Image 1: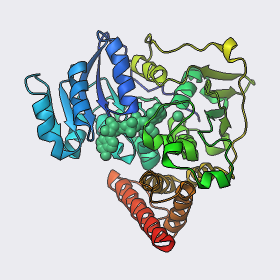
Image 2: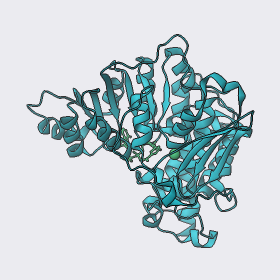
Image 3: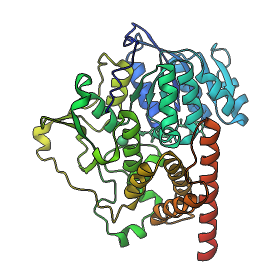
Image 4: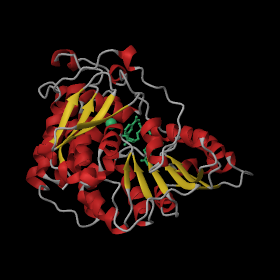
Length: 409
Ligand code: NAD
Ligand code: MG
């Protein structure tokens, strides 16, 4: 049955005067938008931890601005630089992946999970175990760990509040009292920069073209995922886990204006949607303030000026990543884990100029097929299994890319 994040047994909905927050992936696109919302509401939030992987100068600046108690940099070599920059501020510093996970165990009301990729899994699980509600931007950690992620959240009785704009729209459209009457859930997609490109045109696109999203300003990995539409595939898997709805009742609808972010169709024929400007500060604010509303200075939509909204079916032939993700979802957690790992490696290779755009989905498809014969059916009973499978998916993808490169060269 469909679930709503608004229902968690036995826990009151937290709406304290001052909420304590930790911000993982603070220097990224979501991290910065989150900092922006917090800075506009300084009296409502107290920041405990900020983290980043390598941008030490930006991290130090954010830590000072937000008045964080601890700043953690993923790259151990950057420890001294961070320490020197924050000397005399009273902000504690740490470095390394283990320090990021440890920082996630600090007790807070809410953790913004905005690290990119499966790298966010361990810190997010540590935050769950420590009892924090999670504002989840980091969809890959859910795609990678599948049902195990939900089991951990249920055991700790924490809420997972969806930051991803489509899922946030669905959360806002879900009537918690009537989840049994949900017929279908639809995520919309802008279609990305290559919505109208032929396959032949897509063959020649450069990373710079693929990074230029028509509607949203985002980090590099999700921008490429939007161009291949793998992002929408990951979002189908994300919706399945967040709302407990099966693949057959999950739809993707291309909507180039990105005004309607997602909707729920009920048994009486009602379709309930959320609309808003394409600005991530809106869903971020919804998660930070929930169940209350937080005022934002984001642009308001002028529907009369917009005039027309259009919708079309996704073209699975030109965007095979979407079908691959749906297939993986229907196969099970091991397959979505492999899909995610292979995609992360392929996206990196494309950005580094080592493979072509269409090779991203081709690599994922080939890895999924090969993995089916070797690790297919692997069940996740512990995080170690999840991480081992993720490593295996990365290894297979790297090997395949290397092989293709040698054949081409
Ligand atoms: P980004 O690349 O702009 O930022 C990523 C952040 O993660 C940075 O702070 C970086 O330092 C940190 N990071 C990177 N690798 C790390 C590692 N190995 N260990 C620890 N930290 C690491 O990415 P983004 O666009 O902000 O996206 C973050 C997440 O939110 C992604 O999962 C993305 O899919 C999701 N998301 C983003 C948007 C958006 O508009 N940007 C929208 C919906 C969902
Ligand atoms: Mg999205």
